[in-house]
Image: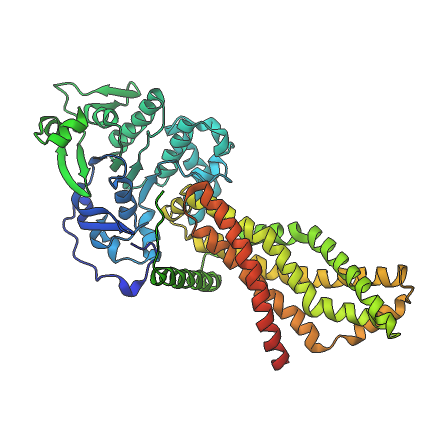
Length: 282
Length: 259
């Protein structure tokens, strides 16, 4: 495994498997020193879909997100994101692709020397394609989405864990990305704050129809995602009724020993006969 | 925890990899100067932090180094009736050697550690990854401004250190040794040859590059949480200080042959 790009070592780009796929992993493997974290990972994330990655700690869930964003290079296999083969791109080319993908890191990863305004508007300010007024407007819009407009001039150290996570979501959505990667967005938070975060993710999924790949070890969050939708009239999440026509397109992917052992819908997960999964969801 | 024995081949491989990664960082820090975007504001911020921030300690150290140099050599020079040569001795020692080296060591202690801990903290809290995820090259944004600022500021700090060191020597010569001020400054100035000045100006450029690249390298390769940050900080200061002294020797020899 190496995070440094050497263009000469990169394989030639392969044809993209299917146009309606946002992310495709094909037989991806990665090791850290002697530890083979991912042995053979293959899955596809369709545009508009939200896929929840489940697995025990250390099963490689976060590694999958970093691989998708090109932050890590796999030892084997190919990865396509939004039609481009990440595994055949140089770091410089990846910077352009990453502007179309948002990521919420496990511990928020906010820049601690910058204010909330500068954190959220970081990407827009770096681009120089928008005027200062437009950047300010987009930042305010993103912060309004996560209901933190009043924190503009605060530093990350002045925010609570939940607020930091919400600012991280605002930073990820401010560029209106086509895909968002959430790395344990509710990890280490209390149940009430976790529900607030999940509600925001649902809102992003149902209002903006953004494709998402979400890592979590909280099964409860995953099922809330699959059984609820965001009601824009009531401005809150509501359970999906039996007669509801809302198609939430939330699927599950379960990892075990570096391999995918389940890839399907919530109903299939509940009905599975796999003992490991039954024990996991019990 | 069981004791793990690592083969010499593994250790050698690790060292070679570290040198390769350091060389890549150093190379990128230079080539990025010629690529957009250039982050001029970050360079100025770093120049202020490294240059202006180090000024008080550089002035203090320079003054007392010059003073103690005059004091120590005066007794020997007096035996030969050559006390009037104090200015020459302080001047050549400060400009050729002590000014650049001591300033380099001070800046290494203050800034190589600062860079390693700052970048190391960013690394372990995933801020470097977040920066990459947001489409910014951390080498361009974090490393290049620090390298450029250190090289430029160490150059000027060394000149200031030389001057203040000469002032320290003058103070001792005038106040304690009873030498004439005019004589001190004239001999100090006249004894400096072109080669001495060039040597004193070339060294800080190399030292500045070493300090910043070593500090950034240890910062960017930090692993292992807060403990790792502490380890990187210590390693950065030790490596930068040792490298300054080693490179100083070879550079002095090289410049003595060339000039």
